[in-house]
Amino acid sequence: MTTKPPKRPRDPNQLAKLVVDIATGEGQDAHDSDKIPMAILGKAGGERGGRARADRLTPERRREIALLAARSRWKDHGSDDSNK
Image (cartoon, rainbow, N blue to C red; front, side, top):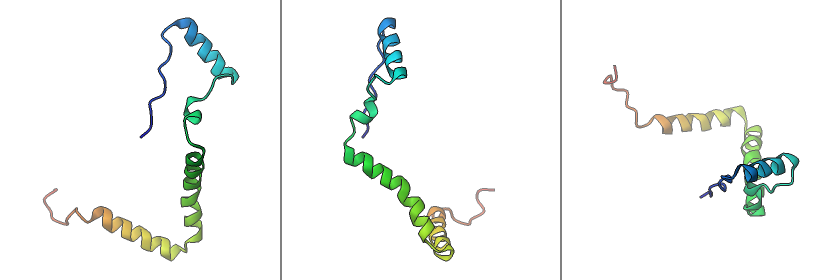
């Protein structure tokens, strides 16, 4: 479960300083500092993995996988005419 980002300061002066720090790169990015380095690497691998797998598959195998997915997706939707 992801954590919420920290709230913005209510004081306008503190908010202005935060904005300037972020704009100049001096502020810490709370999202990356809280994450575990291996989790960041795993996420990057997952983003690349799907595309690499698709590139390795033959068109016939991709079609088989797509048909299985479509059947699974639509299996609960009967072919009855009650939705007309």
